[in-house]
Image 1 (tube, protein in one colour):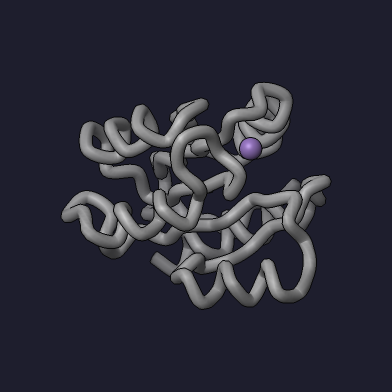
Image 2 (cartoon, rainbow, N blue to C red):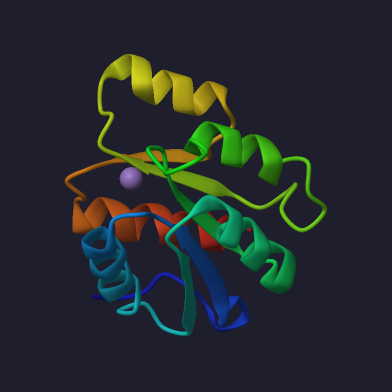
Length: 133
Ligand code: MN
């Protein structure tokens, strides 16, 4: 597909924190179709937060149902960290009721993508957020 990203917006890094390996692989495969994207991934929240400190990613994709900490606890921490206070965070969750999506917006997520993941929706959301930055 055609990318809407310009040359000045190349080499963006995206971190995906997700405990389901099948979802991780799927999203990585989808986003690797975008030009000059570097994917980072973590299967549990604490290693995800560590990657944020090390790499200051341009965009964070965050599962809600995670071991040890929920995605809501993770975004709360992200918004207190220098490396991610201004970083867009997108929820990717199977919790797809309107109240879930509203809770996500209230918690500070820039977008809320529901599972099963719609490929076009994911690509559109990611490209829009990265080109707005
Ligand atoms: Mn999960």
